[in-house]
Length: 197
Ligand SMILES: Cc1cc2nc3c(=O)[nH]c(=O)nc-3n(C[C@H](O)[C@H](O)[C@H](O)COP(=O)(O)O)c2cc1C
Image (tube, rainbow, N blue to C red; front, side, top):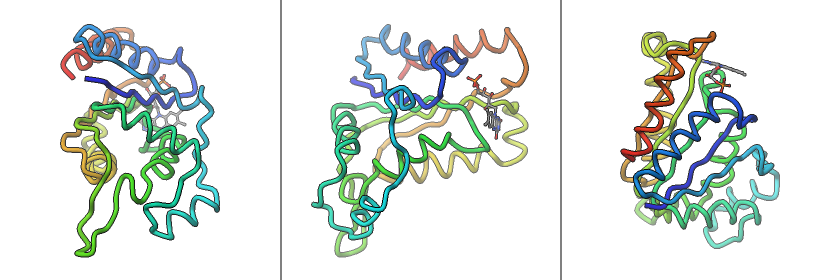
């Protein structure tokens, strides 16, 4: 499978970067091909400017989108698998990734309304995974309802909701403080998730 990995962290040397690398190693081991998209390093602009906003709200699926959005959609068109690797910031994805959804999930591409109000999508991705690294422990995220909230918004709305047939969320929590054993365990987990993708 060809897998597009969207990486949304300012530092490749961070633990999130190490997890992304371990995950990609697992993908390679399993024989998948990988396209790695580092949103910060590439300078992706997450801001919905007025010109694109006018296009989105005109609900015209044919109107051409900005070049950078078309480039993101072109690499999505090449991918059967889609993976996001990011830190949990204020109980959500980092702003650069939220802006990626705002701008790349365009009307006419990620969704469109038919005459009977049903939704259709041009996305060809078959399987998606969100790999989220968090400071809180898994237990605390569960108890606060934050895992469920993130699942609903990210997986149910932004992934399954645009017609991707299979989507999963893996939260790797408990990363506050320097816990070498936890980190080693999670790097192994990331590699095996890549291998099993
Ligand atoms: C701006 C910012 C906001 C954060 N917000 C949360 C949060 O809401 N919940 C949480 O569990 N962890 C939060 N964290 C902790 C990160 O999710 C955690 O450190 C994660 O493991 C990132 O790893 P890395 O930056 O070392 O790669 C936050 C960290 C930062 C820098």
